[in-house]
Length: 129
Image 1 (cartoon, one colour):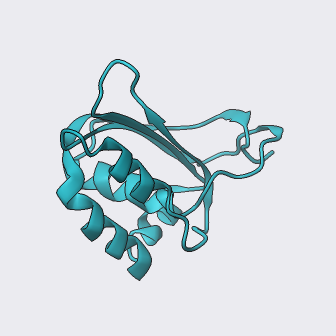
Image 2: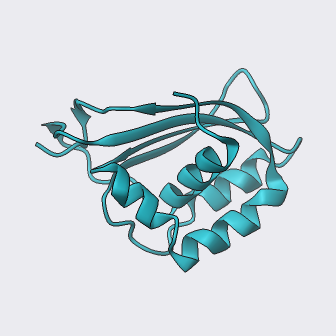
């Protein structure tokens, strides 16, 4: 299912505040919720946008994994991969004042979105047993 532009933006930026959990080989649990999306920065602003995405100011309850990656074939492309314990945790994170402030700061640096999809994580590194 393709996500609306607002959902991908909000989801990706919400997770930026979570950081990446310690890596341990584990299996995923039922009901986990994932998002994978490609964001495009305004030309020349990718590093500034990535810095905002990686700013960690507050724990994000329910965030199991968050990865921000440069697209090596696109000088303005950024991929964001997120895993949540459940959909409701992701939705709740979007209401936090710190997340809303980060979204507002990042908007001028975002040129758009190319891809976005929901996933149902089933296991991997860094996910709960």
